[in-house]
Amino acid sequence: MSNIKISRALVEAKAWWAEARANPNFRKGVIGAVIVAMADQASKFWIVEIVRLPERRRIEISSIFDLSFVQNNGASFGLFAGGMGSRIFLSLLVSSVVVGLLIWLGGLRRPVAAAGVAFVIGGALGNLYDRVAYGYVIDFLDFSGLYFPWVFNVADMSVNVGVALLLLDAWQTRDRKPAN
Image (cartoon, rainbow, N blue to C red; front, side, top):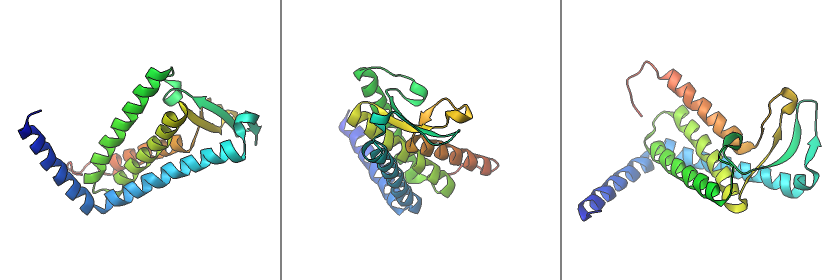
């Protein structure tokens, strides 16, 4: 990269940071994302260390809900499951998505969209921590009694809530001219 391109990139980054710092949605979104990631990790700590679900494998709670310990080596629904290569690939991919979402969040002025992005970032960070620390994501919420075949976690729910909020925001703003 030439010095001119580096200088231009630094100026743009500085301008973005000034806008993000002044945006209350950015501050709230980052705090929300951290809370979501912490809630996800707290739930996994509770499941692993207090309930000791890895040793028990499954605890029947009701006819529709159980706690089932699953080590998810892939992405959603087990996609890209594999060894160290897929672990590195997924970690880099998720890290890149989080950075992109943080950049977007810095300029978002719509509270519903900012909340959606915060939920997605928090969920992504919760599962990213698992992938880096353990080599797999801890899943334990099992609604197979409702014929829902996947076991998931708080981070997965947060990503889904975030996507739903982003869809709601898109629906609410569909007739407006484009804006942040």
